[in-house]
Image 1 (cartoon, helix red, strand yellow):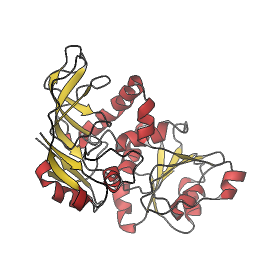
Image 2 (cartoon, rainbow, N blue to C red; image 1 turned 180 degrees about the horizontal axis):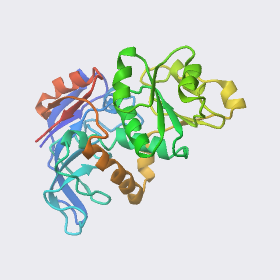
Image 3 (cartoon, rainbow, N blue to C red; image 1 turned 90 degrees about the horizontal axis):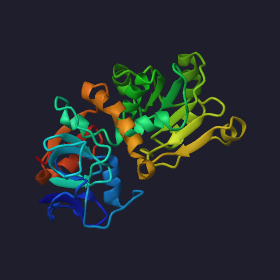
Image 4 (cartoon, rainbow, N blue to C red; image 1 turned 90 degrees about the vertical axis):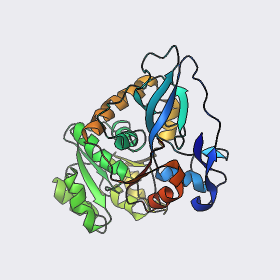
Length: 325
C-alpha cells in the first residue's frame, strides 16, 4: 500500500516521499476499512512538514488530516455504515494513502450525488468555521460578525454558515481585486484592510455592535479588527497567515473588556463527544452537498504525483486534492 509521508521535518521538496507501508489489515468489531477517494492538502500539512505545528508525528509518518472514502469492509458490530457507503474520515486519521482503518462512531453515509472533492474538505475548514461561529459568542439573529482573510477557504465557509444561522458578515480582504469575488459568495459587507477601517465598518453597518471577530491573518490586521468591536466582544485568533505577531489594543482590552481567545480544531477534537460531532456534520454536510459551502479546487493528483501536487498547493491560490483511487 502506498502513502505520502514526511520522513524528516524541513522543506517539502526534500522530506516528503512516496513510500510502501503495511496494509491496514482487517477491521475490528467496531471498525471500518475505507478506501480513500479524496484527501486535500491544507496549510496545516505544510506546517507539519516544516515541524511548526501544534502536533507533530514521529517520522516517517503518513500525512493528510482529512478526507473521504468508501467503506471496503465493516466490522460485525458497525451499524451506522455498510460496505460501499461513502463516509468522512476522522481528522485524527492520516489520509494521504490508499486505505485507512478507524472506529466507526459518529460517521454517517454521505450523499453519492455530491462533489467528492468538496466533501473531502468538510472536516477542517467548514468545521472550524462552524465552531468559530457557535462556540464563543451567542450572536442574536441579524447580528454581525467580522473576519479578515475573507477569501480564504475557512472564511468562505464562515460566510455560508453565518447565512444559515441568520447572521451578517463584515469581510476584510487585503486586495481590492477580490472584493467582488467575496461579495458574489454572499459577504454582506466587504472592505479592504487598512487605515480607518473601524470608521468604514461603522458606516457600512449603521454603527451596529459587532460582538465577534475572527482573525486568520495576524499582524496589524488583528488590531484593525479589535478596533471594530463592541464592548465585551471576543476576538478569536485561529491562524496567522501573515506570519507576523498579532498587534492588539491594551485600551480595548482594559476599557472595553474585549477578550482575545485562540482556537485550534485539534484541541476541540480531543474532547468532542460523538453527539457534538454528529450535530456539527449534520449541519455542514447538506450545505457542502448543495454547493452552499465550497472552495476553489485547482487540481486533483494521484499519490504518485505528490511532488507536483504539493508544489501547486504551496502557492495557496486554491485547493489541491489527492485522489488515490
